[in-house]
Image (cartoon, rainbow, N blue to C red; front, side):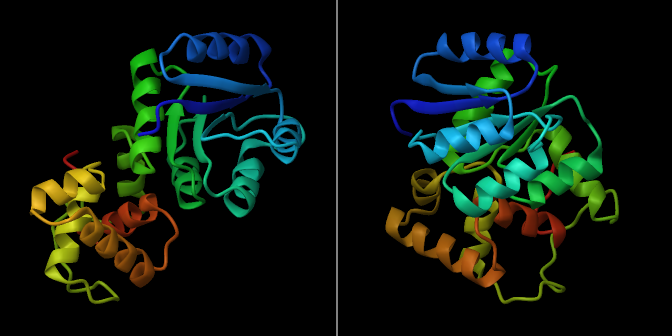
Amino acid sequence: MKSEINIAVVDDQNLFRQSLAILINSINDFKLVTECSGGQEFIDALQNGCEIDVAIIDLDMPGINGIELNKYLQANYPAIKVIILTGHANEMLITQMINNGAASYLMKNCDKNELITTIEAVVKNGFYFNNEVKMALKNSTNQRNILTKSISNVPIKITRREMQVLDLICKDRNNNEIADSLYLSVRTIEGHRTSLINKIGCHTTAGLVLFAIKYHLIDLGL
């Protein structure tokens, strides 16, 4: 993981945004690059050369809201990891935001440690799904309460090794950790990850996890 994480906070609630900015600046290796009161202000900052690794975005904002801003970032700045931080716990909304490329989804009543964990995880692994998000994704499939591993209905052919890699990706392991677990080189793991992304047709690691959930390839442990 890079030594310093450049972070943006986008929220129209001044006191909340300012308090979050103070918190971020108090954490070693976190650098608050900008705090913005709305989507257009953040877009302007990016177009003026602001370099961001992680954007923490509220959903309810005047003008360009969080849903629209996330879509814009996925299309124009896909390297930025978007963390939705909101007061909305609606499962359909959670699923929509993750399907639209958000790397994580948190409630505003989360504690400091979960926020830190989430920021570090999305930089390290590309996504972070807590139990609330996993439950929303699980329920969105309208399947049995107990998911079983089966590749019989998967529309693509996944090799045994790719299944092993996919399983470890879903357990929040990065390429180095997967390589150590499977006694393979990091380059080989990168190849399997790229192959999975190409076969599935997704663009992010989170997309691999969504695919695994949809086709019952992992046990969420919920």
